[in-house]
Image 1 (cartoon, rainbow over the protein chains, first blue to last red):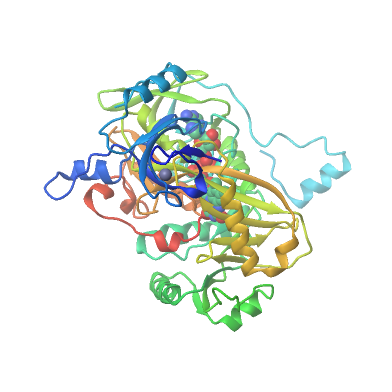
Image 2: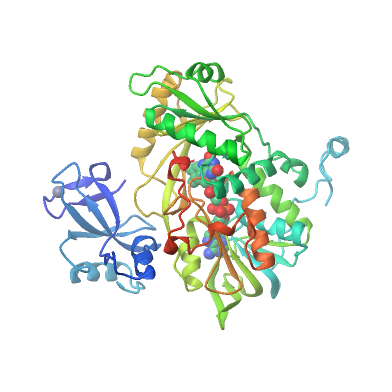
Length: 107
Length: 415
Ligand SMILES: Cc1cc2nc3c(=O)[nH]c(=O)nc-3n(C[C@H](O)[C@H](O)[C@H](O)COP(=O)(O)OP(=O)(O)OC[C@H]3O[C@@H](n4cnc5c(N)ncnc54)[C@H](O)[C@@H]3O)c2cc1C
Ligand SMILES: [Zn+2]
């Protein structure tokens, strides 16, 4: 069972209260982009076995979208943070590095 | 290899079963092979088998990080059907289903293919239209299916509640020659046949790196050392993303957990497979009497081989509504597998950016039924270096080019 703390309302929400939204920090491509860019954005999503950044929505709570850093191999949660950022905040990166010294970093 | 037969059983019965030989050998890896298959699940083993049988390529190793058949091949609910919508899907799934008809004889191994019939319930008007369309498409594709009435549904499966309060049954798509098989036996049967052809099945041998030179694979790093190869086939289902990354390319695939469960064994009460896509659950009865049940995938990337508990609850809620008699049944076991999902719910059987490296993945929640056909098509691709008619449309570049093989409806409930 996955528990994520909503960074907006502070509720520790159990996964049935949340909706998953897959990869976070996506750069969106639309008309005018190349086929490669559009494919990478739309289909070739990151699929790591390990540290992953995701979008989640607190659907049955405050309704807001937020982001989470999670390990897909163990379900460990490193932290959650508001969605209005282009990449993971420094303190989240530090937390992950402390737990996963071999982690290659966010790219 | 000594053949299995009624005479063999009689002979062994007379000498206290001391003469059975091992079904497959467990050799140490050689320095190099003509072809290496990564992943000894059903699809990897079938690929190796048809490489040998159809193309005479037998200097082959199949590398498996765990034990053979221990991935999704040994974790699925064994539904076999070919009632998909698109022509290219119908072709490969029907090829596969028809190979299952004679697989036990072909492999000299009882895979217990049981064409007991698969019924997909239509419980909304949208589903009725969708399945009628599929039945028409199947008629054109030469796949035998029919759309049947609620009365016929009740005749075929008396324990089904066709007058449920939320979603009464309005009809069903019926494939009489669909059914189930014994999942482990499929892996074991292919493994025994591959070993008999002189191929090396190397278990507990994880591929940790792919070595390439000038755009071609030369070998793989493994937990049992470096092994050279002239051709590489990656057939690792849920771990396709990892192995592709070792080979230097990214796949349009994401890994999620899918669960199944079985009940305590009860007396025979249903002799077909029923899938209820609207309420999201499906059920059949195993030869041991257990009700075999499956449902939904998690909505997030996951490699833990166990799914979220609330899915079990949702699946059982759906099935109790559909089959009220199971409401007091105890569930015995639950497990999960990591399935590789593509954007159009169709598989990938494809060349890759590396000239002599091929990939077979993306079967997601529904690739047990496809094992023989997929192995057949993948062997052709690896032997000739170009896909044959069965695999041609399933290349990995179709996403970029917008040639989707959309099976999100036919894939329906995860199975
Ligand atoms: C719960 C559940 C129910 C399902 N129900 C159905 C159903 O009813 N009908 C149906 O048609 N399909 C069903 N499926 C889907 C089906 O099980 C799969 O599509 C199919 O088994 C995939 O076979 P495979 O050989 O590709 O993969 P697998 O059997 O998973 O084999 C891949 C192998 O690769 C190995 N491997 C991975 N990485 C490495 C590495 N680096 N080095 C070496 N080896 C590696 C793994 O250990 C594994 O043994 C279900 C799946 C699940 C999980
Ligand atoms: Zn909230």
